[in-house]
Image (cartoon, rainbow, N blue to C red; front, side, top):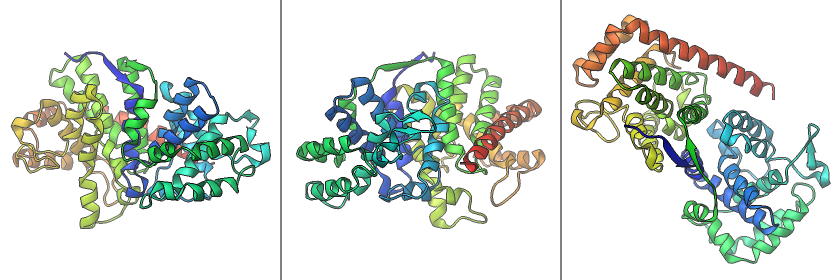
Length: 423
């Protein structure tokens, strides 16, 4: 029996933050650094515990709107061109998930310059001081060079910030940084490989008891971050989730287990955040190097979700969708006896959805062609024949569920894309 989940909000956001930073080695721990530096500045100027905690969470999510690798790498430049694009995108993604909605305005304005006090307002809206703290913390983080000893860089970093005080950064915050600069532990913590543990010990966030509706909403939030990076993937996860949920119901899963399967479907490609969008949209055949990167995504899904103990079953069903019954799958090469029924359902749901949708290198296949390939895979001991039988016997019902879910996701993506293009 799958019980109600009791999950610390910090762990959820840390999980997502780590997934975003997997895309390039230059980005490792960037979100955590911004969260830690923001928290430290907020503490230094005496903001409340609630405001400090909100800045930790916002710091961990601040670049969630940078959907392309090029966008992510450009955020590492001290002087950015059009920084509001990814900030606004992050705001749009965050505001629809209730537990993150209060963080959305902080992310939206985290690149607003101070401009000698003009940065206190935007669009007739007062800018929270937390936005300026995030901005300063973000720029400090990009100035930290991983290959150097942090204590040899503190004066250089502070001088770079100080010269931009008033124009780019709020002077009060620069003064707070001056005081922090004298404290070696602040810099050593910021550059530490254990910064995640340091953040966890400093934060005082309440646990969040998620009901099933909230859990599905959370998974849908992750789904949009994963899929909205490309119009080729914009509906994939929704299709897999709907197909897996329908198959689970036909396999006599309980109503609650079917909902958990839907959540697992939404999260199954979380590791694709480590795959550059440029590869996902590449027309034609992938190079060996490109394909090797793509093959890593299920590993990253598994390692990311295992950080949340309560997601054990979800992780099992989500992460093994490229394993095969004969052990020829990846990345763990599990065999039939090692794969749960939920994992086998997810594997077939992923293949069926992928074959049915357009990809950069081909158009979506007809139902007959897709079923022929799936039958060949089942005969070759790649997919479960019993799950294939469920799909074959209830094809119209399952295909309708998939199509409906993908059409709804396509509309959401189009609406989202239109807003982004108009920024």
